[in-house]
Length: 373
Image 1 (cartoon, rainbow, N blue to C red):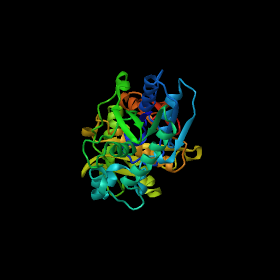
Image 2 (image 1 turned 120 degrees about the vertical axis):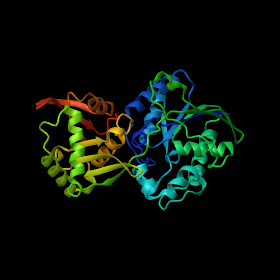
Image 3 (image 1 turned 120 degrees about the horizontal axis):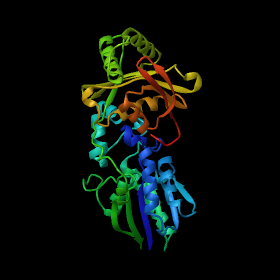
């Protein structure tokens, strides 16, 4: 008999940005690092003889938690990877849902019928992952093994193990670092428990993410100048408590320059068809030093304080990563405590400060590759 701990990877960028992360290999988040610590503690003293994971970064970092208190080899397998979503990779879910509602509905709720050119079918994931798991089980007869994989892949494995269709609503998507405990003997599986996340009880975790998905469209500041300046004025007021010193012409001209350089640099956000915010990126500022620059990250008042800002921030970070920048920078006012807390919670650190017209301004930086979203 083989004892198997089947574990979903820790929280990664796609989970918080609401972006598709099949084979896309993004960073682990700050919360994800805490989840890894909790997972390591859970398995301290638990007998593990062999360790396997998907070859994607988020899975391998999660598997490393199990090596913290025991030296052992990590074996990576392509067949334990997440579903390959082809043209949807690293795209934002709300954009896909808006552009391809039928395919999105199939992907979410009718998996057996999902088909997208260039992407895997769920059934193909089930076949490759089931074959890999059985091979692991047979090669480790009499041992205890841990296997780290992904949400859809584990759901496909549970479909195979439990004999349920992928369209069965009782078939779960396991939570980040959720543990499923199995036994394999004589070609059959026995399930002890599924998706146990009790090790996360020590963390002060937010409630399950029920925030809406925000989609984005390129926005022309020149065509809608009054809307852009109204948003910037609102952001200025929130940061400084006054409109004194606000120069709409200056900021509008800069935004028009950013849009001319790349229309993806100025985006308007929507919940469905309701306007929710703006993002303005400067593609030239800091480029000589390998940095990107966020000129404006704005949410309408009714969308603030709801955990939606990270979706907008995610667009900025992913844009500059695609363009080869090593870091992203911005300025935040000392008096804008909410903004400072938001950026620091999502991996920005204060580099320096200068005296602005209304008080101290902090230069803040997010550096790619530090697993700290």
